[in-house]
Image (cartoon, rainbow, N blue to C red; front, side, top):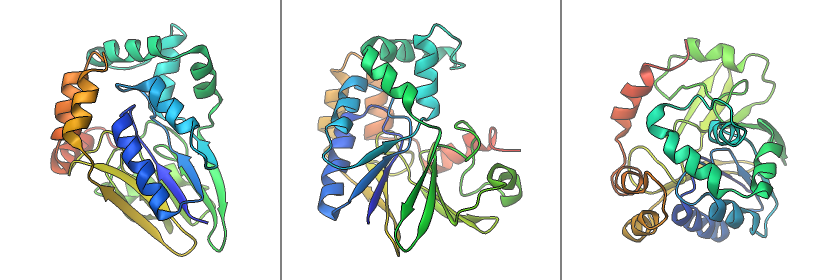
Length: 248
């Protein structure tokens, strides 16, 4: 059984459409959506496209869903002020059915893959959807977040950069970001098979995607198109930024 792990879509529908095409070409049998479907420029449409897939699909919550749900409930989302307008706009775009769906997603998922055993899917770490670590974070700073994990493979996301590393004897693979990557432009996802784990990266029509995003009405549409689609921040920039907030 092949499993596609698609993370951090951030309501970038054109990127998701491209990944779905790639998933079909590979012949994936099941999809895990690893959180942060929202917020972003096309939230309702992105959810609808995922639900329209004719494949078994599982969802987990990311910090994006947690923030949007808090905003919809009139609670403090904890999001910096410069991102509040986009968060509020996302909350306005989602239907009551969308809200109920986001609220029903678990924080982690265990999935049995034949000849591999159980794989644990989480958004950031097994204990928290917000914790930050990258391939450059020292192992001793991450070990506590994986304490008690009893599987050989954990799939995560959150930092929008792919990696494949060992933490305390556990293989931890970051699927990267479908819709808001850091580093080379394009869409990133992960293929998990019985005997293989493949980090995948694909280019799609970035210019067309940027134009669709600009027309979405999203308050940060211009910036999203420019800085998250056409010319994302470099990996070096983001590693430096994340170093200030990574696990202690």
